[in-house]
Length: 402
Image (cartoon, rainbow, N blue to C red):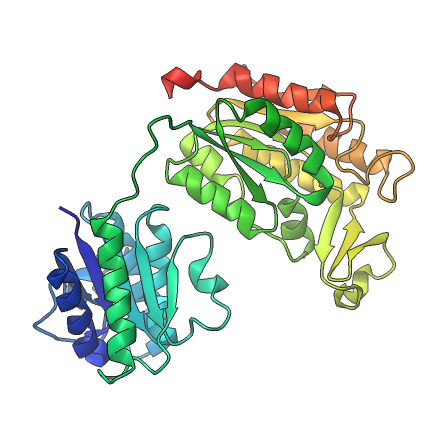
């Protein structure tokens, strides 16, 4: 039986939470009302704040303090851990202002992609990226504050409750001929490569292409962690440039983390490691203004990475690959790592590329399961795409075995 978790702070949102709970239950979906209020003692809740706080690694004493900001952060951490221990969270709906949204959404993000999640929030009409991240949280703007049942909140909260109930009552049917999904990463300057790979594999695999803009890499790895991707062809690891050099498309320190945690079949490469991404030219940090800059479009300026920066990236990637115990193949395109890293193109720099490749070889501990493969091609050459497909075929299970 599907079970919906209705979540918020009962000390400030108790009546609203009960209103939503009653509507979800009236739609035929059982509920669990979770109170996250650090000053709550509401008998209507099924789960008390102290029960949640007890999941904090330092105990409930770390949660209940006079510092509101610290208390919210600690309760958010406790709630993530509390939810991880439950096996009956089929869906979740939360209500809150800025504090409540920050309190509830970390646990929502930790739930698998595909688990219904609705967050009714006063901040849902602004920048929701810090709350949603790479997850599939449905953010609904509350219009009025979540402060009482009135002619507006009744409709908004009612729609949210019925939306969650509908998601739980009407599951998305699985296709009868489902192909295993694989993740691929792409940038404009690696598009020819990824298109060639997907053309070959699309009959046997559901090819999910992610734009390597930070959130794209995070989303792909979220799906890996959720068990929804059977393999990865990570052509475009450019988000690592932005992480290490301060660009705008970083996927964070956990890039490649899901690969290590799950042992999923992984074929990677150096796609677009020749560039750090910034916004319009005037947004490029002053320390970089004298560098080799390329205006990709009026909103995106690219900066060519140096030999020293490439050595840093090679060592960083190598350390990440060494943590992977699954099958790993990492292909090195000696003829250039992007469309504009080729003879006659603005980012062609064989010495910088060589520094990257040498750092990879110096760092990666090669084994039968973890291998580097050098190829005399540009990342977009047909021969390189063929090598990616061939390498993936060596380590991925045949379709019938997924």
